[in-house]
Length: 487
Ligand code: ADP
Ligand code: MG
Image (cartoon, rainbow, N blue to C red; front, side):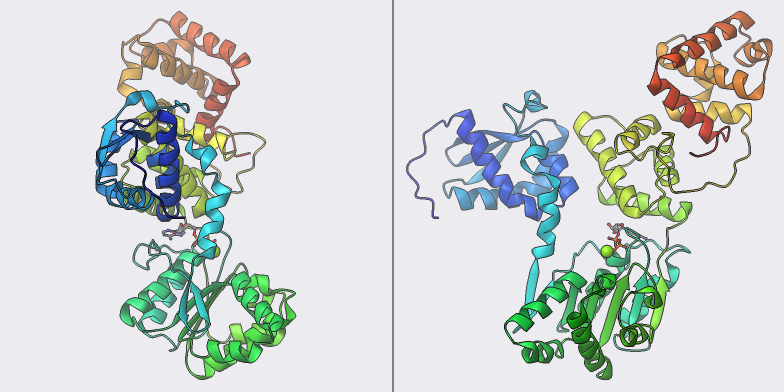
C-alpha cells in the first residue's frame, strides 16, 4: 500500500502518534538484536510530528546518546517509508514515559519473544539458481569465540578449515549439548571462509531446512535438479544433524550430496548433539561423518565462562562489577545461552532502572528465571567440588559481596540500615557456623558488647521465620561459604 499523503494535521493526537511509532518500530524490530531492541525501545513513543520533524520521546537521559549513535539513521529510514514528509528525527527525554503504558509502548506485550525467534529462521538468501542458505549471523566470528579447554580442539579445527576448506579436516563434525557454541562455530567458520573467498558458495542450513528442501523437491519431482544444484556448493554446513533421525529420504539425499561434494574436495561441516556413532541414522552416513575430524564442545570451565561474560558484557557496552560477573559465571552452569540470558537481564536492569546490578540483584534475577542456584527445589545440574568451610573473614567477604557493603563498614561503627543489616547477618552466620561466642564476636565487631551481638542474632533468627526472601539470601551466603551443599 502506498501512503497517499493528505496534508498531515499540524498536531496529531497522542494516540495516532503512538500508533505511528508502533508501526515504525515494528519495521525496526527485525533489524535490531532482540536484547538491545527490548532495552532501548521500551517506554519510547512519538511525542510530535511537525514540519518534517519526528519527535521521539525517550524515558531516560541515558537513552539519548545511544539512540543518536545507533538508531537515528534506521529510525529515520523506516519512518520515511511510512511518511515521506518526515525529514529528521529529534529526540526528547521525558521521564514521564517510564512504565506508563498509556503514553509509551509496552514492548514486551507488543513484541513477544516467540515471534522474533522464528524470524531469523526465515532469513534465507538465494546464492545461485535454486541454492539457498540461511544468512550467516555476523555476530558469530572465530575471533570473538572464547577458547578454553572445553572447546579448544573444536575451535582449532574450525580455524584450520577456514584457512584451508576442503583440506585435511573434511568433513568436520562438531558435537556437544545445547547452547555451548556449536552454531556459533559453524557460522563463524562460514563467515571466515567468505571473508577470504568472497565468491565461495557457502551454504548454511539447519537439518530441518535441508529436509524441507528435499521434501519440496520430492513433491515437485525435482530431485535431479536439487542434486545438481547442491553440487555447485563449495562449503556445505548443516547444523543439528541429530534431526536426520527417521528421515529416510533426506538421509539418502544427504548421503549422495555428501559423497558428491566430498569427492570434489568441497568442505562439509556438520554439528550434532552427540557423536556420530550415537546418531540414530543409517550406518553408511555415520561412517561418512566419522571420516574426517571430530571434535566435541563441552561446558566451559569457570575461567572460560568468566571470559565469555566479559566479552559479551563489552559487546553490550555494559561494565559490570567483577564480583557480579564472577557470581554469574559461577552459577550459570548449564550452558552459555543461559549465561547470556542473565547478562541481558542485568543490562536491562542497568539501562532501564539505572541500577547497577549487584550480586544480590543478579541472584534475584536468577530466582525469577528459576535458575536460582539456591532454591532447594531447583537442581543446578552442576556439582561444585566439596568446598572447604569458610573462615570468619570469608563469611565477612561473602556478606560484603552479597549486599555490596564493605567489610570495613560492617566491622565499623556506622548504624545506617544498609550496613547494620549485613552486619547482623554476619554475626548470625559466625555464631551459627563457627561456634564463636557472643563475647568473641563482639570483640571482632569493634569491641561491641556481647548483648548487642545476642540481640542481632536473635533478630535475624526471628526474621527468618517469616521472611522467605531472607531465608534464601542467607542460604545463598551459606552456600558461598561451603556451609551447605548445592541442592
Ligand atoms: P549451540 O549451537 O551449541 O546450541 P550456540 O552456538 O547457539 O550453541 O551458542 C549459544 C550462545 O552462546 C551464542 O550466543 C554464542 O555466541 C555463545 N557462546 C557459546 N560459546 C561461546 C564462546 N566460547 N565464546 C563466545 N560465545 C559463546
Ligand atoms: Mg545450535
